Image 1 (cartoon, rainbow, N blue to C red):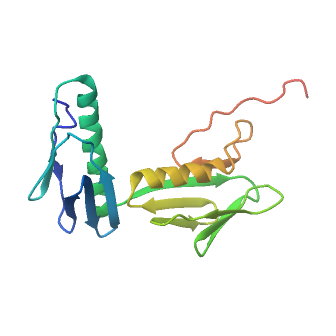
Image 2 (cartoon, one colour; image 1 turned 180 degrees about the vertical axis):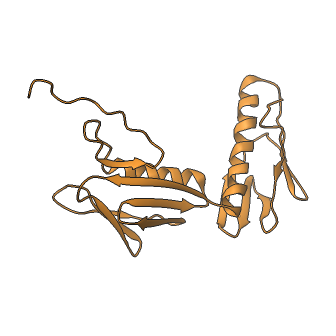
Amino acid sequence: MSRIGMQPIAVPSGTKVELRDGTFVAEGPKGKVSQAVFEGFPVEIEGSEVRVSRPGDAGPDRARHGLLRSLLANAVEGVSNGFQKRLEIVGVGYRAEVKGREVHFALGYSHPVIFPIPEGIDVEVDKQNRVTVTGADRQKVGQVAAEIRRLRRPDPYKAKGIKYADEVIRRKVGKAGAK
């Protein structure tokens, strides 16, 4: 058995899960997340536990078994606690501010960069240079954080740009000839 796939998913109180037409739906205090269930992989909801089974013992079945269990566990975790990614803006004059459902960035370009916030995602800016992306859907939170980072990737020479809070930028040396 898959070590991850055979583990039951604990459903916390205040979170409701159900299976509708091949779709797993989790609803809780942080929102609602739906995840398509792979065909042939039965999902049983028993009280406050969810279990995933697999049809056979072939390699692809074992891999998809663990993947499906992780996706369903992320849906349950997201609607009960939520997910977040933190980004930092590094550079003189680089800053961000939230205006309605848009984030306005000043990133050293000749124009402000306007990033629309997708539905189901919240963005907060602290001290104009710390951005926090939160939401119930783990994939969507990571995708939005990656899109924000892509607006101005960190430069390896001066380390200016948008980086993840826990990211370490490997610095390169500049020209050695100018002394």
